[in-house]
Length: 299
Length: 94
Image (tube, rainbow over all chains, first blue to last red; front, side, top):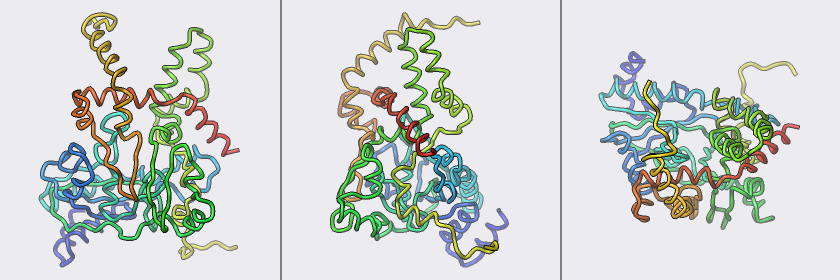
């Protein structure tokens, strides 16, 4: 890694390009750079890069596929969540990028991949970071960032005191997809809004998102069905039961047992239902297999 | 072995009682001001308030708001929603 860094740094290649190459080489599929100061217009004090690293100048934001392409086509939502891709790689990628920056540029770096600061709130918005770094734009599906190439991304970032030339946010919105505009004009809805009216609402106007709302608390039971909040709610329900047999039925039942298993092994802690994005044309396109494969099988 | 404090009495009990009272007064408002509801004009998010900003508005400490928000985030969920989500996921696989 250091040798590679020495080699690339001795070339005429801009440092931004080198860092992006290191990031992609460490497993990311897409990468962009945001200026730390650009967060100030959007994020409250306490949730900006400099709150996590004093003197922060730049944020290297990167992502990869959420699931395997096959998992997107699985009829079993729980199995989808067990086929995570970049969520299992991102910490390794982030460590490599942060260390590369520190060892090759003499600047500090910290990485962050979305761990919650308190309750459901993050330290820093990964979605905002990805948006500012030009990796994608907000979607009607809860404001998640869609990348034009891979659709839904799993994200991570490295904050550094190193000053880098930032990328610009994308000028053309990825959402709505042209086919969704056609659906909206015909029926006044889109695949995502139609799929999950409990969590999502919004309207298109002149082929663009006019406004939208996302009820995060309604998404929690669907995205983390066997997660921390399920554990707390079911435990409270058990406490309220006077009858020992009823308590046993609840606590030894399928959902609570899986929830405890999930807490122990992380198997279903974040197990999105993917209902809103399973019919998203951007995600479907982004998870289509390549046709120019190197190893073809006989038909 | 050190004796464990009895949560049913003493300062800890008073602290929890005080926190419960604060929750009755401010829980719903803190929840409404938090990231629980997210609104966008176009694709620009209407900036939500941080715990510190909510604290300033309601005359509480940031630590109190964070704690009460965590309670509200659990409180506003229905156990049935988890069962329905579980049934939805099971149903989709059949």
